[in-house]
Image (tube, rainbow over all chains, first blue to last red; front, side, top):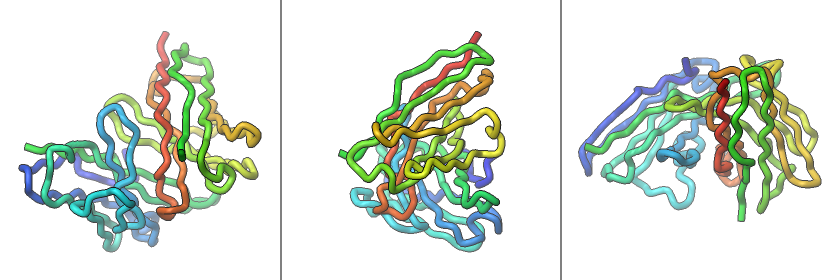
Length: 113
Length: 120
């Protein structure tokens, strides 16, 4: 059971827009912690896709965008392409006695129809 | 080149321990925490803990407290993750990850992963 909740799967046709939600609580996303998003292709390490809620690292196409509101965050992919078929994870933090600890969502499989 | 290079795959018996290494190069090793996460077959990513390569301080996920130890060797720019009393549900790919400082504290540097199989 992940601290951050994501839908197990989303799908769309090439060119369409899909969104992935990441729902947390007042102890993580709602506490103002940054949300980061990662893309993982089969058999590879995750790759940073969005950082600080809505920023793209250099080299990430602008069809990927992120947003955050309250206790939730979202990743949107516009103009879906075959190469976007992958697993996507959100990540944030939760406060503890020993500082901020990392939490991940359960992951969302994006299928391009 | 900024990279984290991990040691190779391991097969262990239940009850044994495993120690995985993660060697950093191409960036300031002591400046940013190095984290360990794992991913069981077909499952999501689980954060395990982190180590401060400079001072050696650690924080571990509560469920792994007592079985997990992270250490570092600054002379070789290497961190180690040791998990003891292994069980079958510890079978997973283990990754080390860190940040370059360019993208807040998001993980933009990842090791290639180390498969640990626990089987009798």
